[in-house]
Length: 309
Image (tube, rainbow, N blue to C red; front, side, top):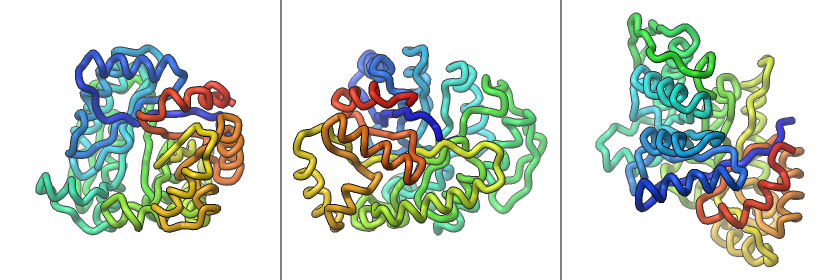
């Protein structure tokens, strides 16, 4: 069982100075990682923002949660990822997914293929990345990518390439992640392409039981099991968790007891949250929790209590 660690997902800041200060604050409070998403709305470009964050800090990991595979050819991505891994001296976590947010595809004009095609493309991309990171070159012929004698420079800092984070909520993606990823980031269903009712209905504890079974199936036979990460919708340090759970019960259209037990959110006093996270690690294996910018300060005592434990 892995020790706990915690990440903060951030999107933007009003200035370069503010972004650097935010990164150092995350580091100083004991968080393991600063993540940036990958959308075409109001957010910083991931690679540039993470490079600045890595330069402003000394121990903080940086990564994407997660890059949309459809936006970058794997040979291009490998070069950028190896460079950031080298510049951060191994503090980079490369997050990748099949793509899901419909509005990104509509606004950019990038074709939104059916989920099965996007996952096929992701699988091929991983093959190319694995060759480049492990041997420094790649030749691959698939339905979506054809690569001939591609050479990777610079070599990544970490042997075999940066830690790979694969994120998603479907059977195929999570089975693939179990087989390939260093870190599996588990989210509710993204099939609808929007944040809404379908995602909420996929937040039941039973649905997470299914997801973790898919991850375990993919990881069967691996000598080292992947680290299991849970992306949250909400976290709150409060003396009135019941009211918050009732609000999310109405929002998700799920019974209060199911919302309380779901890893999609956690609320209560510091001691109560610590206990809930330990229970969830015992049930699902989640040791790596992702929270959001507005919760950094309030959640810091939980980080102090659990990090590395």
